[in-house]
Length: 470
Ligand code: SF4
Ligand code: SF4
Image (tube, rainbow, N blue to C red; front, side, top):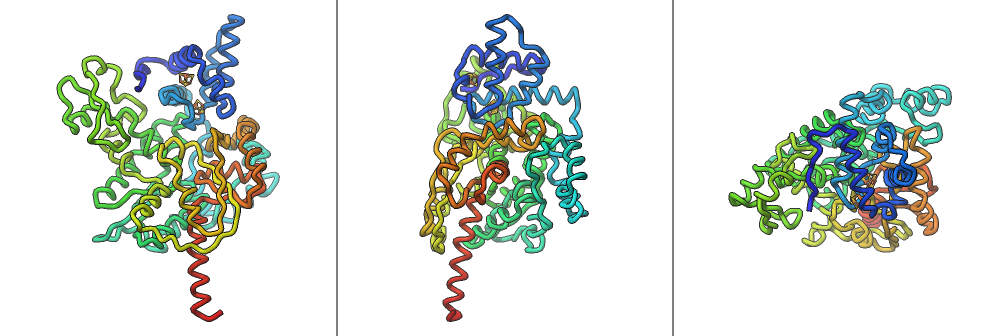
């Protein structure tokens, strides 16, 4: 059951202090999160110092502590991470955002700059002197490998292909690519479109902005809410027109499928929609459930189970609608497969690959559809990395001067594990993990959609060679 949201009248310092008391007494994450989170080890160090030597945790230490949470979602209590984000937002409301954070979080703006000066940007990042200056302004660690921004982004490609207009009178998938497939790795967006189209699905790419997660983790509440509101409007318009909603990035999915609907079920609008009685609070038993409920006494819970979380200023029914109807791309393909609608005739790909399910995919509680789909490809060997590993990148965090080393340290057990398996390539659906793997390991990294698209393409090519008698 959710813990009450008691942050409304507290300062950022008071919010973190209550997290400190709660997690200090509980102690569960001292060992559970020892190797997969930067927040808990530092927190327990300060907590032990306070208890053992009586030196209290200072306000400055609490302020730094909150920066260590990357909202990976792995710790057992969603309330704790939500409180840390709330505290961070309140600090930023007071302090404002640094230029470095503004540069790092605005991928669409960076991409627009690259559209205007395509050669200049890559020259800037490779030229030692100017590159150094650029890193200094953006607080990027000197040793962190920078991404090469592609000259054509996914949205330009979709515009050329005519995918930005809905095809009326037909069933479409409205595809949310997010910034990573949209601007940084357009090959992922293209592969997703190719796989869906290969299976007879019309793809429509509605207008879209960054999902908001980079802004959320930096404490920029206004930008987060603005982005989420815009995406929600566009995607729900597609849903109302009869489209299925699909996204290929687990972080966008985690925000829109999990975080967005948190506490929305307690809203009056939702309670009315499920005909809750006068003294009832109906909470769905399953994620998409409108038929089976846990029924609680409203008189007992009405003050603690309320829609008062981070997204409560947005319409709760819209939040629930989007969260309940958005599919992860792997989840969507698995559905096509179970309905017998997925073409399973792939070409042989005789390679040994390691699949890593990223934190934000695991936290969506949709199982792990990609390894099963990938093993439909003849000749392929997929080894899963089991266990609670994290790549340590934390979105933009791994770029930052103060976090680069820590981020590599956090991801080191996962990197060791993958080195032990010595695959020919790594498969993961998360672009943040991909950046970290690219930095730390020698193996090529792909999104599962790229491998599935390759399986279809190679088969088409071999069929056309046979037809032409080669
Ligand atoms: S996050 Fe939850 S389980 Fe972990 S220490 Fe805090 S209260 Fe305990
Ligand atoms: S959300 Fe992730 S980074 Fe934040 S406290 Fe929980 S485990 Fe640590």
